[in-house]
Length: 167
Image (cartoon, rainbow, N blue to C red):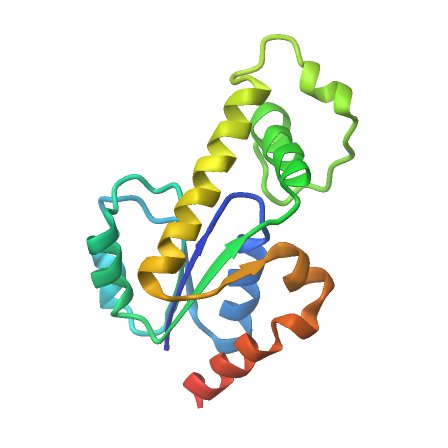
């Protein structure tokens, strides 16, 4: 089974793919770069996670690439303020996707940040626009972080689809 996950940043994509990989004994390929993306097509028992902001894949290339997968998931987050906090914390403080963090909005006032708060807001907006466009191109629904982790009844049909494809 081959599964493709395309997500915005900080919306549970790594945990989601890691859990599917563990549950279905799939090789996890996390955010491959443009040099190895074609190689990922050689593995027929894997789950591949891409960021929606990957600039190296044009819509037609993405559509052709996606045809090689049994199942595709698109992930994003509705709560953009929480996504912004998580992204800012990751890039400006920890550089570790697995760390549990505590947030205070004064952290946006960091001295000498690599990038401004507005930079991250704009980046997240572009990611969301891109994932919405990808949803249209691939004709796939977007699964939202808030549903995936807090209202799981809304995403049960997707889990059933994996089980069906896998059996």
